Every structure is written in structure tokens, then in C-alpha cells.
Length: 424
Figure (cartoon, one colour):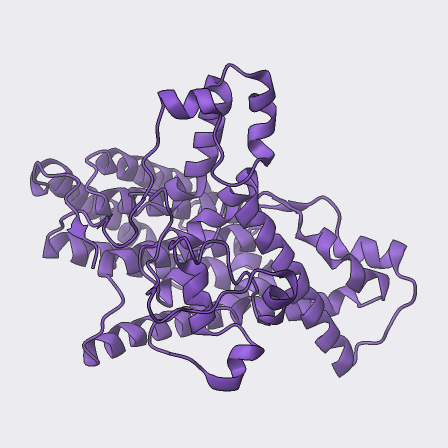
């Protein structure tokens, strides 16, 4: 927990710098692939994901360490070869977990957030799930456990394998020659994120594209079929918390509404997107049919709302950096109380980005939660050791932010709530 937080203190500024560089590069080349509000939504999604991971809000049914101890035929030393084998094993496991995510209704809920952006850029790589509380991927590491790859090797290699999936989320890098035959490249991954019928559920590999070629899920990027990004049932919100549970909520409603007992039970494990016939007829859900002619989600916003969204994001990054750098000082249960504040803050300001007047009340809840934390702990999670006037600063921020939310929610929004721009 603490070690991962320290790693993220280094990784987060690097990722943010690369996201902003891509924005600048697109502007410089007159090919901007990054919409402002979409980028902020992606970054806020990344913050919720790393917060969940650092707090350890997830359990494995079976741990890799247990498998090594009880199932290993023999044990191998931690050499360079071991690390290479571990990397390959993780990538193989990642392919099959990814394939399940795309093919099974209940597992799609955990992955939908990653595909929810209607753009394709480095920022959308940070859209990761907060809805997975029971991890199943460990089962796919069984081959590595059997040959005795040490658990500490997997622990080192796993973050490297994850971070190595960031760079290829871009439209600014085209075909990469012979590397296209071995590695997942931006071209391969553009196909994966596309909702074109030719591209759906293709290129599921994470580092080595060979898995797709072996198991029949490979698809080249076609020059006459430019990828169009998003999901066929668009989320129509900037709020990453809502996006994370949107599909699950649909499954729950469908299971409740269908009259068929069989469908109530099997809906969870049917192919992604499957719905009971009686429910689909009575409660239709919008689905994109013509991928080249649809409206991207983009509520009208003023320059003031855009600027305020950036202010909120910067404050959020400062708060999360303090949490990750001081986990040992804050300790439990403080770190979980802190995490709750982060989630509430993200929910409130992305609701405001959606131009939802209820954002005012979500911010009110967030501020009351923050005040309650200060009163209970005496200050903002031991920050007075470095900032003596912290309580005054936080109280002033709560009051100021609530006033800003009040202005936007009750005066700053026009009657047009869901104005959108045409896809191009």
C-alpha cells in the first residue's frame, strides 16, 4: 500500500506531463485529439482508480503467493530470466482477463470505463475501473505459480507491465514497421478502442500482439475504415463513478424486470450486451448503429466552468499527492476516510461538468464530510505538522467552493442541459 503510493507519486506527474504534451503537440500540428472536458474526466477517473488501489479496496479469492506455496512443482531463483518469464506470464494472463471482460456481461462492467471516452488519447488510458472488488486474474497466473516464479517477482513486474500499456493510447503515432508483428502498437490499440463493427473485440493483447494472432482476435487497422471511438451504448456523462456502475445497474434492472427466471439467472454470464427479450422490447436502450454519424457527448460549457473544472482537478491532485506521500502518518482508518472525500469530490465536480444542478448538493455533502473529518481528527489528517494554518485554509476553501457551485448550479447554467456537438 505505502510502496505503491510512493511509486504513484513519481508516476502521476509523468503521466500528467505526457497528457499535456500530447494536447500541446496536437495543437501545434493542427490535429488536436484531446477535448478539454473529456481529458479532465479521464484524469479524474485515473485518480479514483489509483485511490482505490492504494487503499487496497479489493480482494483476491486466491493469492498468487498461496498458489506458489502449495502448487509449485519446483521453485526458481529470482534471475533476469525469471523476470522475463514473469512478464510473459502476466501478459498471457492479461490477455485472457481482457478477453473475458469483453465477452461476458458481468465482467464488461469492470472494463467499460476504459472504453467510455469518445476520443483516443493518452488521457483515456487513465480511465480504469473502481468497480472490481473481487479479483479473478490470479487464476490465470497458475502456469507461473506451477513453475515456481516467486511472488516478489510478480509484485515488481506487475506495475511495470501495467504502466507499459500507457504509451500506445495515441493517434499521433502511425504504423511502426516490424514492431507491428511483435508488440501492441498505437495502430493495434486504435482498432481495439474502435466501435466499428470490423474492430469490435479485437486486439485484446496488452504488450505482445502475438496472443491475438495465436488465438484469433487480431485485426489490422484498415486504411478505408478509420476507427471511431467509444462504446455502442454511450455513457453520456463525464462522471467516472457513474460510468463505473452504469452497466451493472442496467443488468440489475434487467434481471429484476424480466419475467423469465432463467433470464434472471443467466443474464450475468451471457455475451456482453445481451438482454432478455421481454425487457429489451419494453425498455429499449439507445445503441449507436451508424458509427460515422452520431453525436458525441459534449454539454455546452462556459470558459468559467472549464477553468473551474481545472481548478478542481489541480486541488484534487494536490490532495491525492498528500495522501500517497503520507499513508504511514495518516494510517487506518484515516486513509479510508480520506479516500471517501476524494470520491465525493470527484463525483461533485464531474456532476458540475455535466451541468447537473444537483452538483451543488453533492458539493455540500463533500464539504460537510471534509469539515467532519477536520473536527474528528483535529486537523486535515496531520497536515498541521507542515502547514500550521491548515484548518483555516481548508474551511476557507470549503466556503469558497460552495459559493462557486451555487453560482454555476443556480445562475450559471442555461436551460440547454445536454447540448452536443456532431461527430466528425
